[in-house]
Image 1 (tube, rainbow, N blue to C red):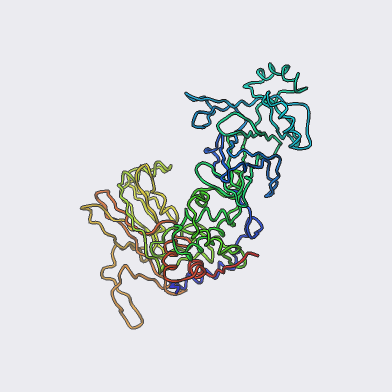
Image 2: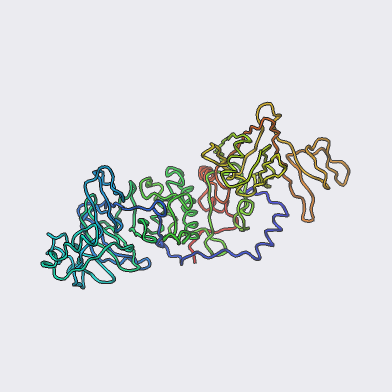
Length: 562
């Protein structure tokens, strides 16, 4: 089944490197369904306010509290189904229930960050809620501050405004003090209003919200439905970082339909689920500096909750519950991409380190190679490189300068009239010329470059023997033990080394007098690990998900983690 074409040299190097290579253990102890933190909005995309709606409805609201590790600590319950978490700052709300830091042209409600706080503390949420209810005419609400329940009253825009109301309020509520803006405070409100339900300002605790209701509740957030709970962090006191706290199985169900069509064959979906799970467990803490494990974009894996999932994709995930891709007893780093275009690649040829199970294979069952093309000029290349920080003069030629034994490009050369060539290798051979601003997109490592009209076009061999450069194989012959064997072609050029015969990929150099180029390629992605369209082809050919995994990942097993 597996038609892998490895040279003797490659096997020799693999054996040497295997001695010193050990797979890294997962970042967190592996349970059957561990808890993950997935960043939904963060950094420059942080939110001043985040709306939630419990899908269950019918008064099934939320538990408000915080997380201690992966355990949720409930401080207070509310039956309100639509709530909004806001940072402790003055915010403006318009008719569409949008929230703004700066007053828009039209708004109807203001949430103000200064309050009065009673001197009494309470041992339970119900006691604080009852006292707040007795002061409802003053706009009182319960809060949890530095480990104690208290009651806060009113909303004011400044300290002076709160102080002006202090005497009148104390006549009803007893001694009160002014509490102002806090970078560690989270305010929970009824959506679209300035009615405050609860505040949390308790040192290092971040606000956690857990939906109540059915055994498996879901929550609407920003047009997507999510399982699990939510956590909010104000990193350095800024806008809200919004995190979905969710079990691995539910997370994978929210990844699968965005990384692979939910209508695809079950065995392909199971293989994808294993890749997603194994990748996730090896990548926990990737975004720890931002307060979560993984993000919801292509930087990690695309995750958008339950919207696009169906029974087919969900059952595929359930079928591999508790299983992972393993190498040497450890969870393997299971990279994947859309389409190899014909062959996956040895990881060290694209990224940096040798990994024994990430070896290139001929994508035998791929039925949809994803054909594509792109066009650019010398001027375009120069402009793209300058935009990426390179000092570039006049570009005179662009060509593929090296391909791997699997036929994928890992070397791209840009010639300049100054004589100083720029050579881009490994992953840069695919990414360096990509630019949405200039309309250039090289989708994979499997491509050729040809020149424009009138340039002569085509590709020619480029190589050196004993320091002598040659641009053509014409008139060259191979010599064997019995004499001349035959003419040499660029499609089957090899050299004999101490380790055996090694193929030598020919340089593809575009003769582009016009300075116009066409890139023609197949495949989509980095070519490492599982080819999704190849997995689709294997599933349609009757292979199981284990067959698929073992085809694309050399020497692995499928089973529970230790």
